[in-house]
Image 1 (cartoon, rainbow, N blue to C red):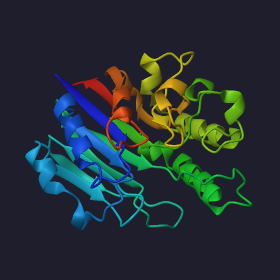
Image 2: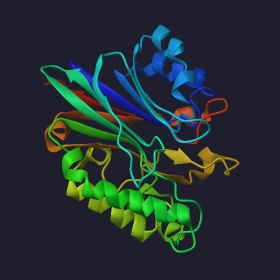
Image 3: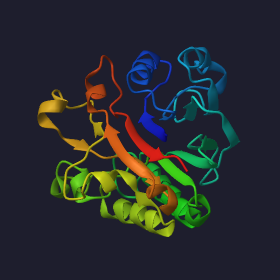
Amino acid sequence: MSLSIATWNINSVRLRIGLILQFLAEHQPDVLCLQETKCPDALFPEKAFREAGYPHLALSGQKGYNGVAIVSRRPLFGVDRNHFCDRIDCRHIEAKVESGQQRVTLHNFYVPAGGDEPDPDKNVKFAHKLAFIEELTQAAERLAQPGSILVGDLNIAPLETDVWSHRQLLKVVSHTPVETEGLLRFQAAGPWVDVMRRFVPPEEKLFTWWSYRSPNWEASNRGRRLDHIWAAADMAARAQGIKVIKEARGWERPSDHVPVIATFAEA
């Protein structure tokens, strides 16, 4: 038996509920963690998920922007939400899910994008992003307890092979040194294991996001790996594989992110 966990920045759960249901029908993960749901909890399309076989929901949403959710075929326990930088902006939700003889803790994050100008003195959005990552680093040991998995849109591509051109993106938000070094400090502070890079070597290109601005995203392949799956050491040892569902970027009216699935052996 195994536990499969998917993560996907959906860029509006109501607008793209059809794509989500298509994904669930085709891949059937046990748990799906969504980011950027852009939906207050009262308007979340719960009925559609229940009818699709995902009756267990943990929600933290707000109107128009941000928002995270966990939908599951398995019961969820201990749902909690943490807020960072003295803001209540629906960027984190956690829940426990049964996996064999233990309950695995899932952390679902949507890290601030940071705007366009990579200067915290000129851009309050970028300053917020850096402060958010620093607070995560301070909380890393608490978050990365045994039996924990962290997923989500972390909005940073930390490795040179996580972007289409390291040299050309060094001054572009999501791949600047101050961001990548900050994210790697957060990872080391856990410590967290980068599950995706356990199965795709760091020397190989790996992307989960392709800009809407590219007229032919597939041919140009100017992607970035902004979506991540990390695990505490005990869970990383049980990781069996990952899948990046690249074809979802070509679906009708898609998100600019694609789903990623990781599978873990049961305890």
